[in-house]
Image 1: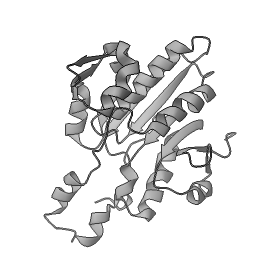
Image 2 (image 1 turned 135 degrees about the vertical axis):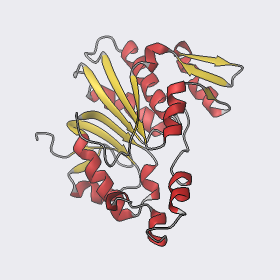
Image 3 (image 1 turned 30 degrees about the vertical axis):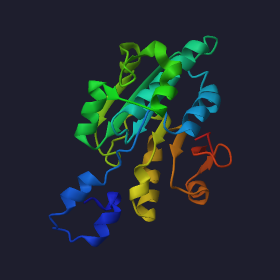
Length: 230
């Protein structure tokens, strides 16, 4: 396994252990849901998009997108936000949704989800852009789906080809030792536009400040560069 991507299980298994494949697939984060992290979407709507409203278009990366529901949630929110704020210059967006597990990417591409409970309630305000059958099956309409590009890849080996205005990485860091979380974050922010925002959990403010980032507000998981003149 690449030294950069050392997983917590890696420390206790021999290099040639036949159990590595099992753990590599079974311990990857797949917990997800439509609009699951309310603080993410509230801040995205109330703060981040307002900050970026004069950019004309924004590029977003959902890094470690699991089965795609996070990516679709982001796309639904931004699509609706743009329609509700026609006076702003922000009118276009593109969203890259990547995950290391092919089966998760295939679910995202298929665009059909069984939902229930809280997810049904959270999706009600986006009824104009989705199809729900018997409160169980949801598919996202093409006007939103076409904004997303699903790609199977390791976020660590991702080659920087563009700078992202918004980079969202939820849960992925939980399953790595702290020293590797820091290395992963250091690599991720190379993809971030100087005026962009990155959403991360499991990393403390002290470390983030040491690599030149700060929380946009106390307790918030969105960060931005301290020096935005670079």
